[in-house]
Length: 325
Image (cartoon, rainbow, N blue to C red; front, side):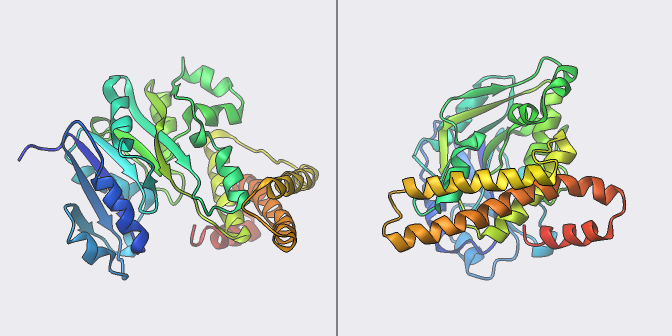
């Protein structure tokens, strides 16, 4: 049998019925070369593993305690035989039958070592999650090349400009497998994709964003979960890039008020929310989400300094907030 030139890697854990539908869309992709699907399952108990064993995919099992965002993806890439490895997640659904082709075509440029595609919010996404995702760089509609003239020029950029330069997201991405020996993902509980893209960009390589390679993916997280996720994200961004979007308590207060006003406008403009009570309920929730997301930014960046100072409170807070993210 001809060895596949492209591999798709998916980590799974209790994927449920949605994953079965998503895998069918992946297996039905129209690609101009052979491809395989490789899965590492980390202890599913809901029938996901038994389902996978009935599908034309290659499966490896690991204990749930051994899953790590960086190291598990490294192991998946080791199992893959394709020159290009496409990385996605169990709850991301390709938007079209040419999702894979669009991603793979990015590597016709020999300078490209990584590519990532667009993320589209689910139809049932709550108004705040939908709004936030629409403003994330991976929701853009214009293709983009990300590379730098020099490391010195990169570090002269403002922190948020640095983030834009190295944006990368393993919900919907691809890497050139030959590069992964020199630049493997590192052991991380969060943000293994940004850590990787920073290192390859600083080494002089190129990443591209291809919006035509799109997946449908979003989560209707509670305000508390959004606080935890934003905390972990901004702790990572501060450590990696020096991002500190909300440096003071007064700035936090202003940002909460401003974001709540924006979110109330989002609720009013959302045609899916019908009826006075529904609108009122979501307008009240605007405050909860605004407090959660802005507080996550404030405490996430601040935690790195406080942890370095040996703060017991921040050590306790960090352990608690990272649990389950």
